[in-house]
Image (tube, rainbow, N blue to C red):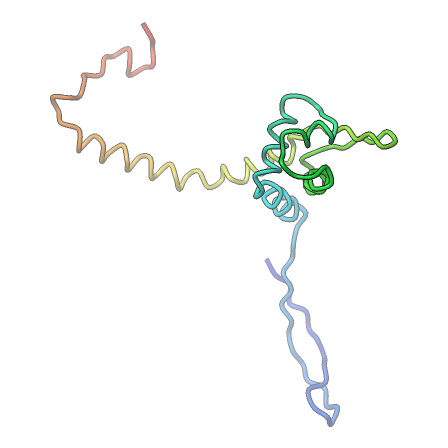
Length: 152
């Protein structure tokens, strides 16, 4: 979505105004959130931090332990995660405890799920081709119980 903004500006030295339309994209809050989440998830260190926080809240110093980077570098990664809303950071003096916030991950998953129809078609096509390539003798007959999903 865009907004057309009419702008008057001076084109030449005679100071004769000219009229133009400037196209400005409209950015909604949801798009900004998704941009931040995907940017945060684009780094393997930040993804590893999120995995560790999925187990339990940790201090920044505890988060930094397994990484071969400085505490300050880990702290900067945490700040990116905080800005994306993926991590909540609580400070008590010099101590900083971090915990996982799943809301933005859920929002990103919902957005991605909107595109599942495209890869589902690919899976369906793959299934058809696999059935064509598999010799009929090698295929096991499907029982009625398997068709309805009943396990024996």
